[in-house]
Length: 95
Length: 478
Image (cartoon, rainbow over all chains, first blue to last red; front, side, top):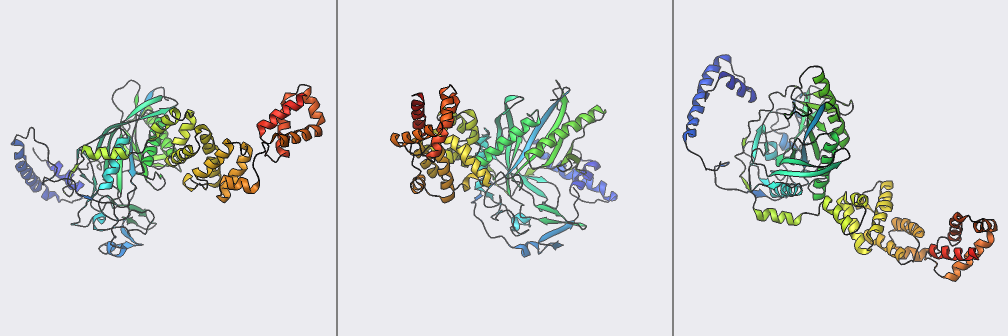
């Protein structure tokens, strides 16, 4: 696997990260090194082994359909950078 | 149907479940509450909050899967679908991706144009809804997260539909099924049943699918049909102009009857799904599936067939009555009281549905219970009242909530079956209408209706019409 600068730019854009042009080549090298290291796993023979979706061998944690109190509008909004009319206020979203 | 192009449609339906709480937390999901009043650290996406799956949502998903002929996966997992939008506080939606709970289902539909047809269902998966964005007049938007984390089933069809009519037939049937199951209230206006349509066209005979456009914001069956038809025309125009259809999301504007492209979504399809480490895998045993199967109500198609077979109802009647589950419950309760299904069906479809429509009521609000209506039908059946008087009794029972027997007794509506009493009325009518009698005797048989009418009128509707008819025939022949 070889990570290109284009890959890094693409992932950065998806993650809404701004990367300065001078950082790009260093980050590309680092990302390539990290993924190259993880890529070693592909040398293992995993034929016949079920893919694992979770680190612990457990399944089925449920809650029943019982209403629990909510935390209230005031507390819900207390960390909001901007709020009004019981809502979070965000920059205009254009659809 | 277009002569040059074949239309290909696939549908994605979001079914909002009727659970009391959200899918991953205990907040109420009641509609129409104050913004953000039904939120907690989980549905606000606060750091460190852990989602826990509602067992009821899994039950509902299994129900939907069984009712649409799907295989229920013994092993399924939840995944994160990553994208940024202000109505999605975590920056990802918890959904299912590679291992959904239901796969490989189908529905049989029927349309005038193409007759009976089986349409494939690719998958049904569970996911959480996003919040709601309210667009203000000023330079900002407001976010209400009451809807965030509301449980949804996404039902994805195969691209098997070839016309807007087929798409609508599929949607109506799916809608009927989820409402029958009681897992969705079916309210399109409030967004409880939302549809996205993937539409493409291809030259007849071409195997490969054309480039599709995804239509969003379709909240009524009529708009869905309009939007699909508009999109097909638009794509034909694009291709005829020598251009290429672009893969894009388009928003339908029902007021203008057109759709427009939603810009800036080119990269949005790179969702980087991965298993959500916050949620354990889901194992559904055969036993669980069987338990749910045992609780399934009889579905509309099975009911329709049984009404025709067991009750001998015509196809039309069976279709009307089986359309809504509360109506079937009413009808079946009525047949238990009065074992004449066709007569019961006539009263339910005519008098009951007619009166409900007039008063803008649902069957659940009907003031005449099956027991009360059964009481009326029994009195017609044993000749206590005539069919005509029964209509009066029906109105009285509707208004007063009294039983048929009470109304008949209080108003003295009991049918006159005493032949002497009817005979004297018949004699009076014959004596009072010498002209008509002469015409009748001269061969104008149609006048019998007139005479019976006169007898009924003179008896205030209480004469037994059959007896009046017989006596009139006898006397007029003399």
